[in-house]
Length: 507
Image 1 (cartoon, rainbow, N blue to C red):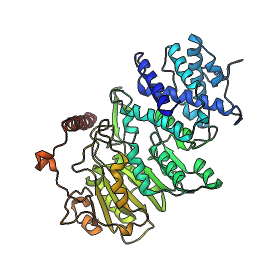
Image 2: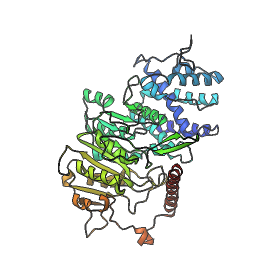
Image 3: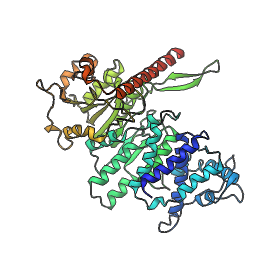
Image 4: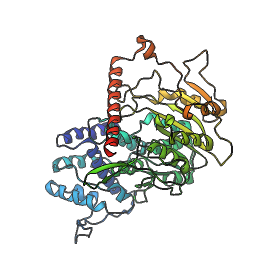
């Protein structure tokens, strides 16, 4: 069976389950549990003979049930009817208390498929395949396909789009950074693991790895944080299907909030798209017994500024994670480029203490969350110096007069080929501008450190190409693109108003 056929069959079942109220996110969650159990079962048989052990059923208090059955695939797939539903629910509860990757995969797990006959259909579908015999590229493509379909489901309530960075963008970023073997890579808000997988593929495809390098890539390269349990489990499963990590090993993905403290980890690369949303907040119960949100600032001595702005905090944290000469590529919203106060100070310090050499300006319509205006900042960490390390910042404007939509006019990696070529990963000193007085539409332009410092609030929100939609009605995008952009702008505006209302209510 081809990978596309398997994706179709697995996803067609989702339509059946939706009639029972099982959303795409819940379905993907159940697929993750069942895939993990099936692959573990395969690894316990020849030629692998891993010897993986699974616990006996436990009661609600965590005590092993006398003569309880083993929580494994063989036992689960032998059940039928009401007995299947009951055993599956008990199995999930038991495995959620285990340590290592097993416990992380099953953390807070619940059975969302209440109809035993439909649960059996999912089990039978997974049971027909030998997943460990498939290539990592095929398994990964299947699971990534499911993750993307889940992110595209705008009608669902999972909000999965905010945890899914478009893969063409990730691949373009990795093609610019070109991570090397035997180097460490981190993502402090790793979502479903897209940056890890793209970096893994890049290293495999562009290097003839020896045994030591392969082992390092599999078990010692990647480190991440993801505080949302369901997203973390999908990340772990995604990595495992791509041959990263061991099924019985410790998980490289922590469940803790990366911003709370510096855990001492220093890495060669940070590749990240921190979560959308401007402010960090916590929900508390006030004196009237009502739930309310309060802005949260992180009191970190290693931060330049104390602020509740989530993205500014992630930017400061990422800088602290890098080794000297370590490289970062971070997706950040526009407010990081122009906001005053703490934002201005963070930009000044970033320009001074790192070599901020490139900013890629992204168009709206490439993320599944509506109305996001984002950029990619590329910088290299440097040792302490009295002089600023940034000499000039190169900007690539892939926003002005560019129109994409998440579903019908998706951005592909080919759209960023010019940027990748102009980036000149091997020798940034040989860069040449495509912008000039004679070619004002050129998208590649540099600004000196002094020019940026002289701008109001040290703003990096720089653009120079004329917006044709404001001056040339003949160059308006197609009606369907225009309509989708209007919808996205309205949805984005509504989200902003909701944030303002929450702030006013809390005050």
